[in-house]
Length: 328
Image (cartoon, rainbow, N blue to C red; front, top):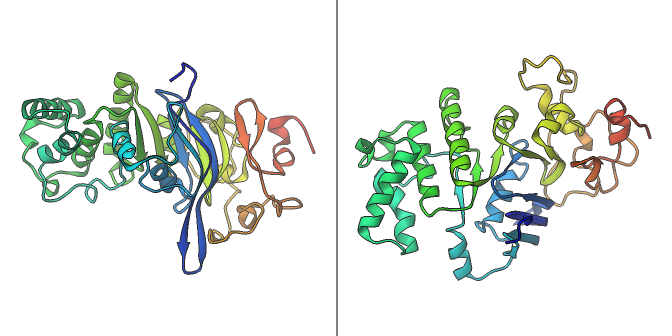
């Protein structure tokens, strides 16, 4: 991999599902890149396709169209044998630690499973590696023979993290990893993920609907709406200068002590999501957007309106004259 090559890059990625009513566009022409050691936060309402996006990248779903690159290698269409190899490079932490753990397996057995499957370690190495992983994620050795139902939510998620780290991956999809946890436990798990990233140079795609969480952990943020990316920028930039109406609406309900942050308390979304099944051309947010007008019925494209800040909205300059310093 060349020095400036992103670890993960997707180009116009698509994932559609056939349904009795038509084709569901779960992920529709999404593009982004994640540099080694960085975290991309992917945010949006439930059903926007952010989890499907992560699962498609690591081949839990096969893509419908577009390209996926890992360390410069096109892995969009690879053999089953190569997918098994990629499992050692790319892992996932699921949302619900209870449902993602086998209730019949102890903590020890759960962490050891990927080590046994990769067939690179003997019995003594597996035992030592298991102990190292438990210590790394903060699980006491006395819990080694405990079953999932004997653990609280925080410990369960630490087991899931240890299992994901077992084979030394480079890239981890964190699929709502703290949404099922109490707030106090959320902070512990987020800090653990940050510490592990710093220690091992991990690269994350962090999927969440919580803007406060994504601000804490992400270097860059991609906002999704009904399968499409509507805004992408550095995390600080997005919170200081949200440009897309949907991003503004998401941020308007986030508690904050920052009195200088732009507030949009009146920007309350009306109506419901339009159907993602065979969607019509044009802006999918238009039906709920207070700024909708001429041009919104046309296909929208991501445009770099500020350095490194991309927005998909034909009326973006009219909406943000104060931030962009220009008018249409």
